[in-house]
Length: 73
Image 1 (tube, rainbow, N blue to C red):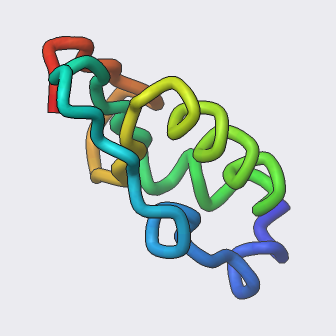
Image 2: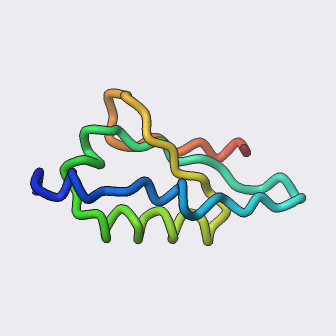
C-alpha cells in the first residue's frame, strides 16, 4: 500500500481534538512508518474514533506501532 503515501493527509490537521474541561482523555502515538503503510481512510477512521473518545492522535518516529497515554493531555 505504499502507493497511497502521496495522497495521505494528516487527519489531525483537519480534525483538531476536542479537549474537555474535565481533563479526561489521552493521546495515542502512532509510528510514522506504520501510518505510511496504511490506507488513508483507515487512518482517518482511527483518528475520528480516537477524537470521539477524547484522545489525540500524534505521529512520531518511535519503535512500537502504537503507544497510548491515558494520563491526560
